[in-house]
Amino acid sequence: MKQKNFMTTIKNISHEAQADAVNLLLLAFSNDPFQRYLMPDPSTYLRNSAIWFNNAASQSISLNAMMGTDDYSGIALWFPPNHTIEYEVLDATLKELPSDSQQDIFQYFREFDENKPKDVWYLEYLGVDPFKQSMGLGSALLKSSLEKIDLLHEPAYLESSNPRNMSLYERNGFQTVKKFQFGAGPPIHTMYREAR
Image 1 (cartoon, rainbow, N blue to C red):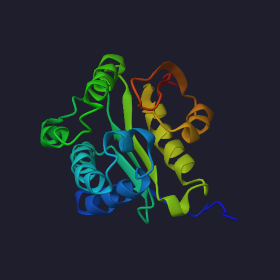
Image 2 (image 1 turned 120 degrees about the vertical axis):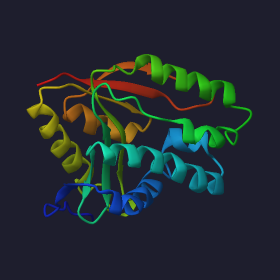
Image 3 (image 1 turned 30 degrees about the horizontal axis):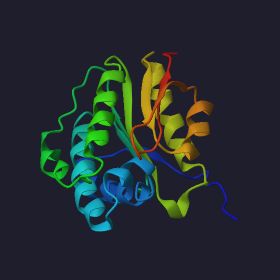
């Protein structure tokens, strides 16, 4: 039986630790319904997700918005309000999306873009090492992040494709705004947390 780890220290992630953080995200999202819908082939997943995660991590770290556990077993990758995320480096990976799902995948991307408010803290990735799941790390990361956001009295937003995470987000004040699904892809819940 797994026990909760109450000795975890949450810290901001630096560029020097980016590789460790990206490795953790690769592990954490290897079974994520949406990430694997985009990249069902294991080799494609590892190669292209590394590009996606490095792109997001580099930008989030530059904004001092990426948090993680001291042993890099959990990562919360945030973007502050009104920040425009740069995605151009991902263009080459889009050619390797499954050809039979590309139309639906791009419909997901449009829906993400249309639904994400600009004036929110955006949680792009929250990941925990599968070996350490159910130990309270995701909850600790989310709570620590939201405490900092609450000091600023600003709202937060995320998209979830993993049903296992819904109760975690709801316990921390997020409410589902919209649910959408295209083709054979997983359902996505957009979730919003009011400023406090």
